[in-house]
Image (cartoon, rainbow, N blue to C red; front, side, top):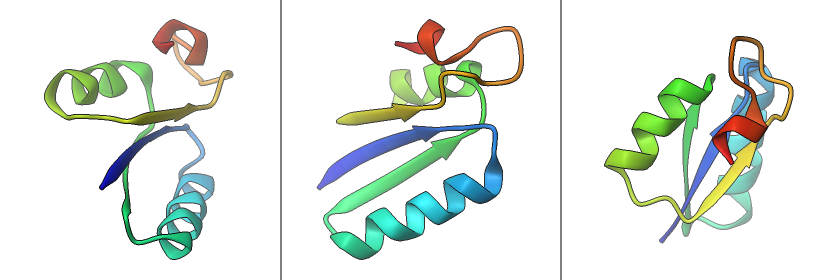
Length: 67
């Protein structure tokens, strides 16, 4: 199974993206969060294969800080 971390502060967009990805292939597992701090915690605790992040996140850190 391929695990994708989706990081975006637009909750509705993330939900739509998860639904679309998981419909394409059930071998994809999506993990979501809405800020860089949470994304870093997830990366420490889970095996993530792909990161998709919004580069213009609200808050002190943005997508480029994550990558």
